[in-house]
Image (cartoon, rainbow, N blue to C red):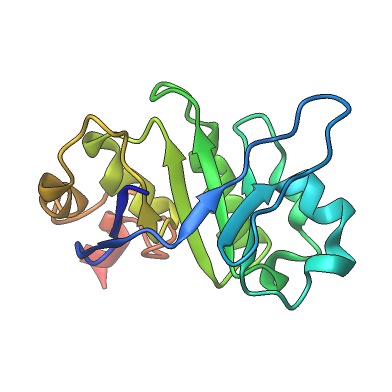
Length: 168
């Protein structure tokens, strides 16, 4: 498993495995003795089996609506949001909805085509951890998380836009 970067810039070993969606007709195969992230809709369908299990989280694909998890967000130890390609920004909206509208308090992770230049924006949207694309240098990630000293807009990390912060 690749290492991951945390929002404070620390690098740690990844403890979670992403379980891919099974092919048509196949059953969901969840490895035992591992922490796993399964497709969100399959987690919801089998939630009675997973609620209270801190070793099973869910992941949303870019086309998945985060509303499917709305009633269960804080029953999940982790939610990951997949970025299938760097130009697909739907994951930013999913993160903000999970944090601001649905009140998700646990770990929120960005997975998929995650690049260094996206990290600060992902952090502002509420992501806690980032699994970089394998060809990116994770040692450069800490600097990218805090590249700008101030954000102009309100986001999950600040309720007020910069002009209101300056006025107070």
